[in-house]
Length: 280
Image (cartoon, rainbow, N blue to C red; front, side):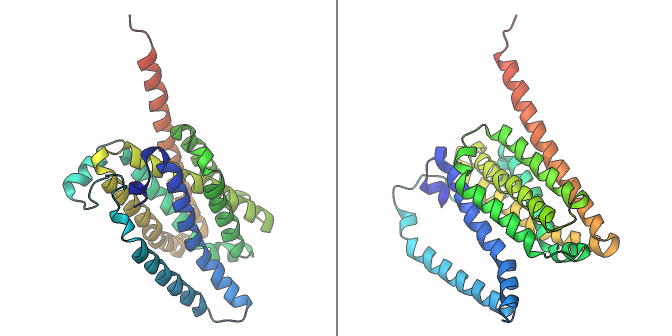
């Protein structure tokens, strides 16, 4: 719907706002559970609030349903997807963004799902992770993503994935107290939060014009596979190797994402230089 409502030049910024709102909902759950405990309420109160939010979201989509059929919407193609259209999208430049968001979702899903175990191993409060991570990620997406997406997206992605990698390493190496825990979570939030917005725009703009909707479907599917699929693997790793085994696996994923981002930038940089160089 967002891709249809705005022109391609503004999609990256609007996707940043959309993803910031989405992350607000995802991150508020653990904090609401913590708040329920402080207020002496049962943890089920957090689930009740989530149900109310879902109902309100349904009402909102029902209300704007007529607007989705407005003639002013951009023609981005039907959202149905098949093996043929998926294959065409994955053969385009947007494939790397789709792969990268899946790995990024795995990092977020792994770190977010097991903060209670990680924080307990250090004697810290897990809510500090969500305060730092969500505060930084949401703030960056809503406040400065509009500026970031105007820069070269491949260069921006290199910088942001570097921040993600440093933060993931930091959880293993230098988190020892509440301050370092909060700051490292915020660093991860900056890198992850802004990079999601950058590659979301790339996935939409690098897909074949008639397959923008399918590219965004695959982008979302890859993200949710990473967010909800990797915690299963991470849980097995914690059971067999402990917290450090899980952190090592997440570090390797962050290193892979960083390598993909750097390789993508180098290909663009040297390919551009080769095209501009005079031929003799």
